[in-house]
Image (cartoon, rainbow, N blue to C red):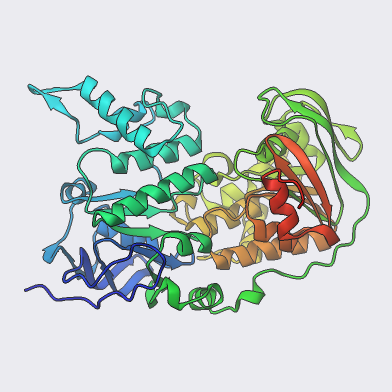
Length: 520
């Protein structure tokens, strides 16, 4: 007879669950040890049919490790897991999928040279008379994507897809084939637009009604309120507590996760503004994703460039760094025309761009922390002499930077791929700090990181501004825009729709221009 777990106390606004007799997943005393690290320590967890159970915690808290065990991509060091009352220990992801557990990981598992539809049915190919039935796969894949209402071509090769499209393809994989019993989502909305996110949440709600259990990892507290029934908070590999969404507020969640009170998240910044560093005048891009854009950034200030995903704000930042083709307009840095110059030239002038996708564009995952930190600075005299790398100087400087950014663990010889997402973001920031630029362009710097890392990043922004650097903060996170900037430009459909000075920066004003609404 299977042991019954504690019945969930659901107080959310969703369809919820009504005292089921048996959990879908019942984990007890789960431990996972890596060399020098206890990733999970005596974790208990239950998932019931028809609920969304949110895993919440800082990067490195153990969330991804726990779902990797449930999904078959890893095994526990000790402890037990039951699925529908039966003891299980999966040897592979395929084993878990066979019983109906499907996962959408933060790290994509797509094969680049295959099409979307081929990836969707990889390992579970539809066959006829011993041969893969390509026509049926095409038909079923098209039906799934239509159901999801994603702007995704099932015949497109993954290698040519944007990160957002790859995210859609991963989600589509989870809904392809046999209906799941359990769906696991790890930060699935990080690259999705508001419309795409709403569609995903609608499908999650449908899955709940049909009895599917859903494990959902997110750092966005607004999402917890939208779809979550229960929340389990992890800290340092241990369960801090499990609560219904209706029984705990955001401030309490933050305190459970970090030990900090909510008011400590955003620092007070003393802006000492001086001369103009960056000037953009009537910028039009070949991609047509931004047009007629004019803005400026001065030393000692943090300027927000806000807007929804797809508004064109990221493309403006990339254009400043020579990563977008410019049709017309001018970009000047310290009065010098840098329009259309390459990355190396722009970097040498003292401008640094930090991309939102740290793994694809910002870092080399198979290289060490030290190599990633110093990569953009090796041409500087302090790191090289007569064409030879000064290894000792590089080591000492990167070790100092690792302390400055509070990298955990501290060692600079560890490969970046083995760090948590939050620590990887810190390494990207250290890469910029190593170069010592005058202007930093941060593009969505807190995507996929926990509250603790957010606090650290916001502290870096404060320090940079108060030390006299200029910062252009490109963000879809309204709270960042409201609390960190002294001026804000709001973009909508490729255009600047508003410039707000510090006294006019409010949630109402920013949101109105997000959606290009007229004042009441």
